[in-house]
Length: 208
Image (tube, rainbow, N blue to C red):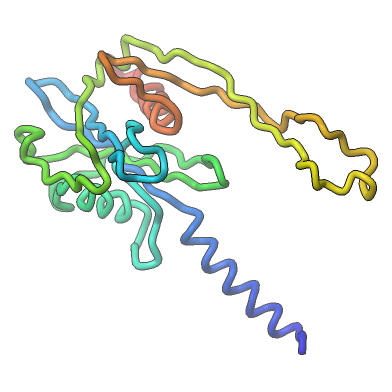
């Protein structure tokens, strides 16, 4: 039997699940290389089904056992790169934003301590193919290329146009987004990662 109490309980369970599955945290790691500050990037493993070979920062979905998005960013960095949590000093947080699929992203900027060289990383090769760094100064001197991505929708052939006669069968633009591209040596950094870099550089640029 359907009751108001059962409906209320179902909605509460849905809300609790949504709070965890709809959040992700990203760490923007800063390391020192030859007395210059660099950002540390990782290339996603070719074994992964989702975006294999793409360039990204360490990070991932907020789990129910995580005490905060900041902890998520540290945990994911340890799991992917083997960097101990006590080596990660959080310098601050960039504004959170909504990415694709309504995912709320929490970006944290951190200094990585006691990392003399990249060879000392204990990389999880199930998730990470390799790593590289880029000087922060390079991003300040080289603004990204930009392109526009249109997001839209188109009804399938099985759409009941007889029920909704005013609906067109053509593509319809829903929104448009600026996509950033950084081309450093043989690496192309774009998408969500480039957007985070762009926000980070704009935040610190006035102070350099």
